[in-house]
Image (cartoon, rainbow, N blue to C red):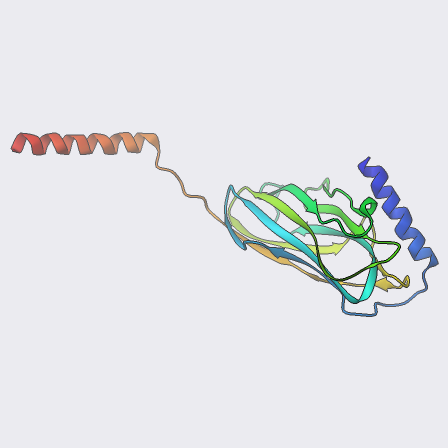
Length: 198
């Protein structure tokens, strides 16, 4: 099902490319990823919002991939979920997936092939599980699978992409049970010693 939807998105955007004239973008369009909390504790979740701004230059849509910088063997951040906002054509909203190399989230798509989408709007919310501490950068690129963006007139668009930074701090290390046992024993001994002296 996921592959069928992605294939449909590719066909639609392929047709747009085919019928469109060659040209550049007409306005300063942008897509940005914003960390809701830029600092979180390891073991908690990090939430990001994906925003578009196609003010003055309606977009038929397209797709983006999220690249995880500082990502080693897929064990620092783990993709949890993506909740899209319902904008334009619902059949163009695709469920993104983690690339086989484990370093990107691919195929976040949106659009409206009849009326286009214009202005600033929230596209969706991404949630990641943070596994270890460190500093991370999440970047956006044109989707390898779904392709780039096109205006309502069929002209290719080149939106500016804004990255998001995330700091994951170490989680508090609980005192081991043996230390608590020893500490309570010392307190008990001190109490008995004080009681004997009285």
